[in-house]
Length: 269
Ligand SMILES: CC(C)(COP(=O)(O)OP(=O)(O)OC[C@H]1O[C@@H](n2cnc3c(N)ncnc32)[C@H](O)[C@@H]1OP(=O)(O)O)[C@@H](O)C(=O)NCCC(=O)NCCS
Image (cartoon, rainbow, N blue to C red):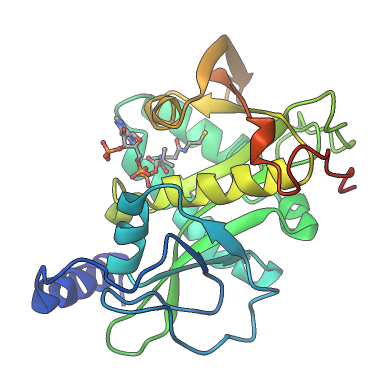
């Protein structure tokens, strides 16, 4: 089934369900991996075998929790077998959502030399995927991804030359927010925000108090909406001679968000 057909089916199902009463049983804090949130009750469903572990996600807003439940969505850590689908989602996201910000030559160059799956994130267990159940078969379908990193690389997939995989020091360095791509059929539904919240929580629990990323021009309004500030304009040289303008954005994390009161979490490395 094409992404568009799938999207249409899911939309139809949501319409069939009507707007109904708001999410009486949906908590603002519930485990996502392996469960499905329904619009009228608590999460239900079997744990699929490819889920590494339950991933606790704290919805910080009821709006996000409602969006999540409406989409019957699940968040889990990416695994190596996700890579072919991740490549599809990344390419569709870039072609579909960056056309207003970058030229066709920049997009082609970036797809070839910068954007892509970073296998190190998957190996580290810091790359998340958002999945939605196909209405007819119930089969889960990846529609977005995003991650964070305890390593120096600011951006770029496996093929990117400017990688630096040495470890950061949480008390000194900023954790990196990495590889956010939402399939265009599923954009502006709060999915990117949901993944970003999961990444921020995980990085905070690993002891980081600052977060940063090399944002695409298309990503700047998204990160700004989540409290990141533009720090510096940068550019990534592309293999075809083009240059990709990006913006380094940063955010301080409130230490009070740490899990054990004010006690500093240990270095997760
Ligand atoms: C950036 C991206 C990940 C955002 O994902 P998303 O799921 O569409 O974002 P959300 O729905 O969670 O958006 C949350 C808020 O961010 C802001 N935002 C997101 N996309 C925006 C856009 N294109 N223009 C303006 N504001 C935007 C809005 O304030 C939005 O809230 P609203 O929809 O209620 O107005 C997605 O657009 C994408 O994949 N882009 C292409 C790949 C890319 O450039 N990724 C960034 C890599 S650094």
